[in-house]
Amino acid sequence: MIVTIEDDFDLKKIADSGQCFRFNECADGYSVLAQDKYLFIKQVDDKKYDFSCSKEDYENFWKEYFDLKTDYRKIRGLIDADEDGYLYAASEYGKGIRILRQDPWEMLISFIISQRKNIPAIKASIEKICALCGKEIGNDAKGKAVYSFPTPEELVVVPLEKLTACSLGYRDKYVHQAALDVASGVSNVREWSSLDDKELLEKLLEIYGVGVKVANCEILFGFHRLDAFPKDVWINKVLELKYPEGFLFDKYRPYNGVMQQYLFFYSREEKLQK
DNA sequence: AGGCAGGTTCTTA
DNA sequence: TAAGAACCTGCC
Image 1 (spheres, rainbow, N blue to C red):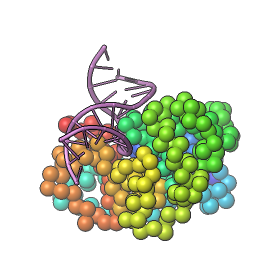
Image 2: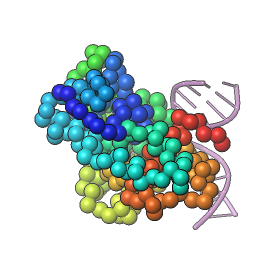
Image 3: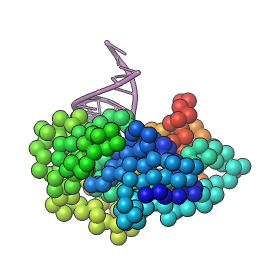
Image 4: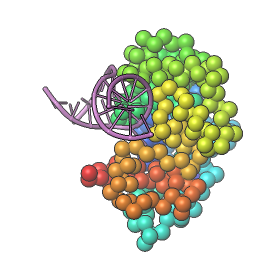
């Protein structure tokens, strides 16, 4: 179906923004995998996109996934070009990025895997896991089989040796334990939406292999709490070089996480000096 | 060819 | 409680 999207929707930037790992340029569009769903999107006009799904799927899932009810232009409007020129430049550069509403379980595993890995390596590991224990859910635009992200139940029964073969390295035991915790109900992430920010962070930090950075990625991308501000090597570099006097967290609340995305995307593309 | 990736855990004072 | 080392693997 054809969808018209007015503002702040750039598929390439979203694909490269580092928040999603199963969102790729494919043929003349983008393939998007989320949980057990596959979508192919092609831009057909300035603001028109062809979504390879039914109206029902769009209304019930993908519209939510792309967070189309949030006004990102308004969020960008919080930035004052004179007061914070660097963030303004970053937001202009990253205009079109949205924070996707992704599944907490899928994000938890994805960001546990992400530690000390570059993005292509993260993607490769995740695809191997999906092919190993996900379900075949169709074919992509090139005819290749695509697989769902495994459920906790599907992942937990995979022996550690097989997980290791997914190039997880030392993270294999983290992934296995997280699957065990979630499948057993010890860490029922999907029920943690009702927790306040502090409680949620504490719960996440109890998971083996989850530290402050991964926990904040989970809060921002898995729970869509737009004020979470994950600090990775890139962001730390930006804060150190561009904000020696401090970043204006109070000013941008409750959207610091959106600002983080602009800074992250800009600093990576710009290849910030050290 | 050694160093380093979107960090976290473990060990040591 | 806080630094420093160790950790898998792939890629430049």
